Image (cartoon, rainbow, N blue to C red):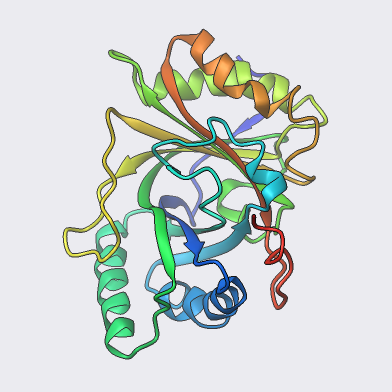
Length: 269
C-alpha cells in the first residue's frame, strides 16, 4: 500500500471520459496544420463543446520519437508518425451527450469547409477514465493536469492478460510503478489510467480495432520527458511484462506545444 501518495477522490468536477487524438500532418504542411489546429479546430471542433472542460496539445519531435517503444505499434504503425497529440477531458456522466455534440459539430465543420485535409488520423479514440494517482496529497489532480501546462506527457499502453482486470493493473501501477516513479527525478506528478471505448458509429474518424482489452496511462511530467529515459520510462514495458498483467503496446513521450508559435514544426522528422 502506498504511503504518502494520494489516490484521487471524487470531486464536484470529475473526469469521466477523454478524447485522445494523434495526428500526422503531411510533410510540407506541418506549419499550416499547426496554425489551423491551434487557431481554429482546437476551439471550434472541441473546446466550445458541451461538457468538455479541458484540453491540451502535445508534439513528438524526432528526439521524442526515437525513444518510442516499440517504434511501430497498433497505436502508431509508422515509427515517425503521430507527431501531434491532442487530449480533452469530458465531465463524468455526460459522455453520450458530449459524443453526440462532437460528431454533429465535426460534420458541420466539414460542410463549412473548416477542416484540414492534409493530415492523417493515426489514433483517434475515446477512453473511459478509471483512476488516477498523484505524487502528493495537494499536488495536481488529473482534472487539472491539462490546465497546468506540464512540460510533457508520456503515453503508456497495453492489453490486459486473460483473467486480469483493470483494477489489477491500477493496483500494480499505484503500489509498484508509481511508488518508485514518484520518488525518482524522472518521475511524473500525476498518472491517469483509462480503458478504450468505441467511437460513435457515425464518427468520421477511423475506428480502432483492439486485439484484447486495451488500457492506457497518461503520465504528466514537469520536466523534459526524455530525462533519464533508460532508468525510467524505458523500463515500463519490461516491468509490465514482469507483472504478468498485460502485454505492452506502446510507450511514447510528448512535449507540450508552445501556443501561439510554430515551435517544433521543424523538428518532427
